[in-house]
Length: 132
Length: 308
Image 1: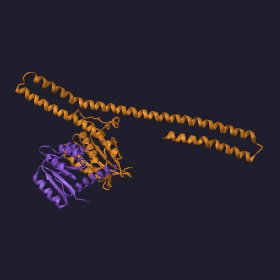
Image 2: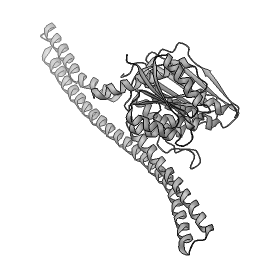
Image 3: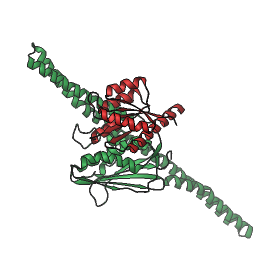
């Protein structure tokens, strides 16, 4: 299996640094950006397998970013990440095509498991589309 | 079903009965040539009449079953028309309210612009534009949800643990049920097998039903979440202690735009989208009220093996 490539979008620099170190140690390629706009910019040139997206960010918020990502890169799985999840933001994210929804705090194993599942999901979908 | 079976039996009888009569006649002929001609003539006549009667009955039954099929089709058609009516009223209602506000605000802007606008009037114009903006996005939200409803989803099957999917959504829901004193009771079957299904779509369905349950209970109540497996299906049951749904609405709750919430709070598309998703996964959602208990009960069942 090829290495999984992940983009993490969160406005908290400490969190980005930490998660990059932890995921890299588990053989996942990680890039990080701090805003939704930067994420869209990044994705324009670089395809990734999974985007991990904080729901609440200054500027373009998580849901708006999610909508744009789904529009521009439908083959990228998005996992929403939130420290203060509400049912409403949850259903909005999921109905706009987020693969999964993770509440902070989470364990790194749990996150990795979900990243793998999300990645498998998009690969299966891509395969279906090629076969169709 | 019964009608078709009866028809088949009679069609068969149409031949079998005269045949048996003939066989009896033949036997009588063999045994006693003298007793003969009259008995045989009677037997033959009887066989003929039986054949005629049965043939007539078969024809009637055929006509009846065709008629029934026709009525069934008409019924489906009229139910479709009814649902369409509800959808149209729903769309009209959801779109007309924001349109009305937009019209009012536009008029206000025009009035404010009539004479040279004062700073006060300019501020009002800016406010009006903000309102128009938000109402337009309310409209586009509705059309997006409609498109989302109409979209056929390409489902992808991967192994998923139903209990885990529910648990994830419950974690989200529990952040709001805690302060409202709504107790969530998990009655999970610990031996649920992994199911091949589409996890994100299933999450959407579970969350939709859970949100409805929370809104139905309002506060001080309970939500009971049960999972179980039958031979070929995996099921999740979500029961709340809210006011419940009257039996005559059980089939309508899945119609698009059917809602019991006040205008502006929920478009009435959640359950219809959920049912669509589950149907695409090869399963079904049913609603009822548990006997002797308050509240509504939604049961989501999906096949353990996809494509069955």
